[in-house]
Image (cartoon, rainbow, N blue to C red; front, side, top):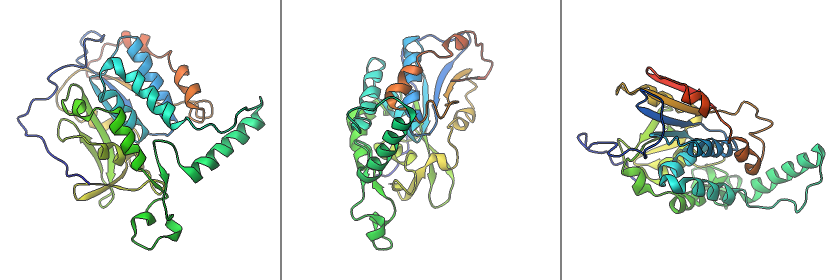
Amino acid sequence: MHDIRTRPINQPTHQARAGESWRPERCDRVALVLQGGGALGAYQAGVYQAMHEAGVEPDWVSGVSIGAINSAIIAGNAPKHRLRQLRAFWDLITERKIWAFTPDGDVFRKARNAHSCFVTSVAGQPGFFSPRFPNPWMSLTGATTATSYYDSLPLRETLLELVDFSLINEQRIRFSVGAVNVLSGNFVYFDNAKEIIEPEHIMASGALPPALPMIKIGTDHFWDGGIVSNTPLQHLLDQEDKLNTLVFRSICSAPTACCHATFRTCWPATRTLCIRRARATRPTSTAACTI
């Protein structure tokens, strides 16, 4: 689709911080690492909201899969607009009303969730992906429509609407997303310190087969980074800049209660975090705060 454009080596990076935000003593950098996991992304939005309300803004945002989408929205907007755009994204992809009313009780919730899964499998997800036509079973070998059940073009349109890619490429904060090269099977990072970031880089990071199609960038094709590594922490640890770094890494420790919940349940539940623990952290190199 688009060639990766490499930045000149002598071009300075991080010409401005994300803004004057709180950080522990001797902490040079605050990083937010967002992994893949579908509905876990709604939890991540709440994690960022808690950080924002506590006056902690990241200098580096790194993501994989759904975490790459959230990361792009955070990095591609000014701090005052980030929560609004995150909520707009999650409202968009969860706006479909399944039942007008759900009676109380597990049996009804399970039935509604099963119905929701069926509707999504048939109709796709608003602003995210739509069914292939013809579907793979009716496509000839080698046809584009034979490689995935859904088309991720709606996600590209959503990203262009909610993310200012010129802001990401100004490098006001560091931004990186992970994907897997289909041909080699190797994990790669797309980093705004090294290349111009476009919607395809985020789409590639979330292109989970066989549901979503591989994404072409330059001459190569890429799949979801979670196939190899679901937590994009290694790229940050591999840096040789010797900056003391506080890393916020969000995981979901209660999958039945959170990851399978709706966006409106997940987001508010994450407003109380380990910000207090972070305030007591004195990093000597890289300190991780798992949320």
